[in-house]
Image (cartoon, rainbow, N blue to C red; front, side, top):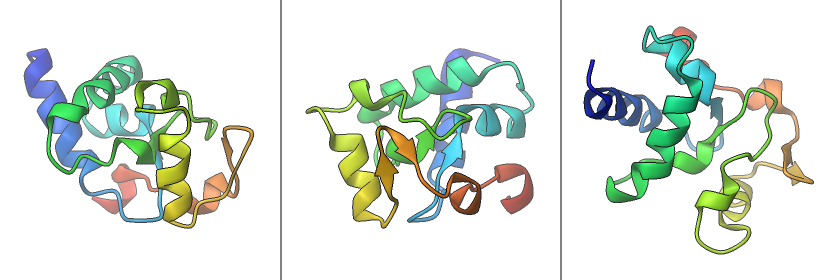
Length: 108
């Protein structure tokens, strides 16, 4: 599978994450049958600015930390986008992570 094909598949999944919910890099990788490729999902999210309507801010690490926030413009854009969807964040940590988690293996 080419990395471009993989990125496109990642974007298809990410576009289905509902407003006010989050998922992890690893959950998307696992759904795509590439369980060890969480980092590649991160690279896809980092490159997603060239794509339309990819809610990269809804993809976080497996512990609910905003590890990708430095890839967004400004200092707090990722957090602001999540908070605008009603997600509470304290010190880069999503609160109520388990309840907000969207698992593509179960949802798609």
